[in-house]
Image 1 (cartoon, rainbow, N blue to C red):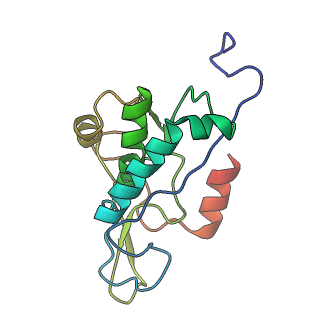
Image 2 (image 1 turned 120 degrees about the vertical axis):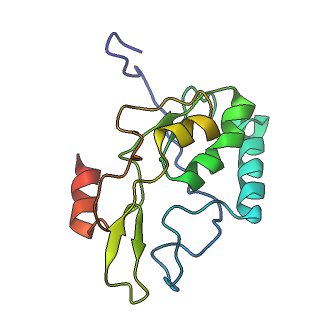
Image 3 (image 1 turned 90 degrees about the vertical axis):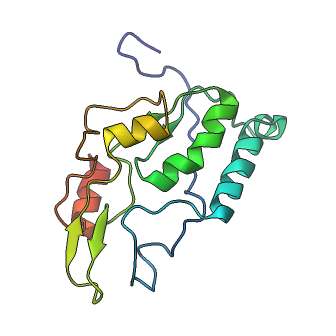
Length: 163
C-alpha cells in the first residue's frame, strides 16, 4: 500500500456472485412475493461453504487467486452471507462497500410490479451483530445503506457504476 492506502503493484480481483437465495432473482420472473433483501437458501449456504473451501485451498493458489489480502462485499444480506465462510477461513474481516450492489437496489414491489418502495437494507446494528468486526463505512446507518426511495432505474445504475 502507498501512503494513501491504495494497493501498489498488481492487484488481482475476483468477483463472485452471491450464492442461491431463498427466492428467484429480483430481475427474473416470478416477481410476485419478492423479498427486498432475502437470505441465502440452504443450498446457497452450502455453496458459500464450498466457495470458502476452494478459496482457502491450495487449488485456488494454483489458479493464481492467492494471496487474498482483502475481501470486499456488497451490503446485500445474501452477499454478506456468501462471504462469511470465506472471511472466517481466511481470517480476513471484509470491507462492506455500499456502492457495490445489483441493479435495482433494495425495494418492495406491488403485485403488478409497477410501484416500488425503497427499503434501507440491513442496518448498521444488524450488520454488526450478524457480521461481527467487518469494516462498515459511515454510509451504513441505522436506517440501512440503501438511500433510494424507489427501485433504482437502469440509468441510475449506469451512473453509479461509472462513478
